[in-house]
Length: 199
Image (cartoon, rainbow, N blue to C red; front, side):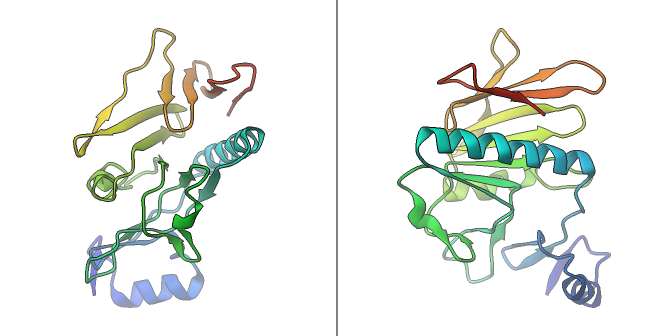
């Protein structure tokens, strides 16, 4: 077994598994990646996203948002999967949701919430290879969001509008940082701008 980072050993991994600390660890073409534990800010942002998006999709009549599930690339001989913080699967595409994660297709969007020493940006190649149309990166402390859209096999950063908001086309939701101490992240339904929340 290859392990990244290299200061972990197979005994360390076995102990993580015994203690249940490996829930979000990943395998990148057979190389085991240890994921840092999330911060409180990370979990606050994740909870806020889940609440808002869950209610939003229910109001629209469907779609699925799931936290921290395996997203597989089918075909490689070695295990190859990532565990984004959140995945969005549009209405009518539920067939890709398997018991052990997402298989046989790409989610319509994924969220990665940054943590110290994480590898969110290093996952872009994997997500492009399986065809994820959109990646949303959220900085939990500064409450800032980036939207990256897949174009011709690579991700391009979506520029912010005049109001400072970036828009997810997949979700039809905008994200805008509200300055302050602490900063907040405003989420707005583009179909119904009166539906909004700050986290």
